[in-house]
Image 1: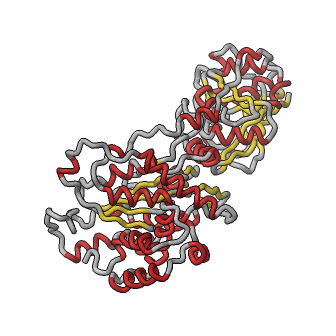
Image 2 (image 1 turned 120 degrees about the vertical axis):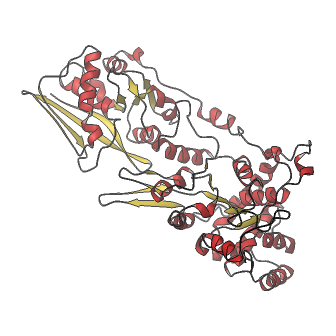
Length: 513
């Protein structure tokens, strides 16, 4: 008897339908074709044990299974459930009438319980697009998939529940229902860290506010213990709230990577990724034998924080250059290519020299000028060219640390950031791919970031006196445009440019010499 069940294969952060055709005929043989990997082929043993533990027998017949389309590699253990249900139906132990209306995915334990899978959200989106009546998944993945409307999502704990449901016992499984909008908006203000806990460092907080308002990349240079990592961790608390579209896109990436727990339906806070400096190229950008999203994709619509930037492998830093410009990464292999979003905000921190105390107000630096320069040269010019704001940090004096008065909370800073972003969204509404000032190209700079005569004179003097590099010019204008937006000013004024010039420390001639 020939029957069909339906599953899905992940490609990047999207899914495609896989039709599982099972045919049982006379003989004793088991054949699984359709380009399955080792994990899929091993499902034979898991299915036999799961069926036996639940009172069913694996058919003593010639079982031929084809996973179509046969030219797409099938990976992982998530095909166990549709394979097992297809075998039971083909052997006559299960009525196949309901199979065509449902997509199924799930890994089987030896006792028949279902284990969670990766990519439940993109699979659910594909099931709805294909017109399936419902999707059956392990119970741990049900909330994640249930955010997709117009699709019944059933969370099953065991294969027995799925068999009962397919046999017509509707009470065996109940659809998982969640109020997506209520959960999404109610949890958007939940942050672990807040700027109200930071004493002093007002100039650095201001730089972070400007970076958040314009989507600018930022680097902090300062001695050990000056608070670089502490403030970077608080940056997500002042970024604009997720839109529902951004949340869905980011959740899909984390779903494919298996980073969501069973209680998460939608990500409500922007991601903050902080990989260790020993990370490899592949772990940073994504890929591998079976491609997975890298750290730059997991940070999509959020923050990628690189602590101790010069300690990262030079090759790892250089692979960031293209994603910083294009906001996506393409992983190419001989048989296929996958595309992952990578629209992240880069925040980095570093010591100014090997000992960490160059330019320190009280602690003497023991490094030679050549050692300082060599340390700075670990970061290439093209990478620095993509970082708009460079801010020096000095340690907080005791008087500030001991203050009992709370600092300005993140909510107040975030309110100003949201207003500035709203101006930018309106300004670039008709321009595809541009959402904030950091993404402006040369044409838009000439249109929206034109300084007045006084500002142009100030900028000229700064370029001459500080001997700023040519790449600093565009960056200063972009940051000045954001500072003007924070003040709701239509035109860039001289004091906006003056503040933006202060954020180009590393471009000044002689810094680090």
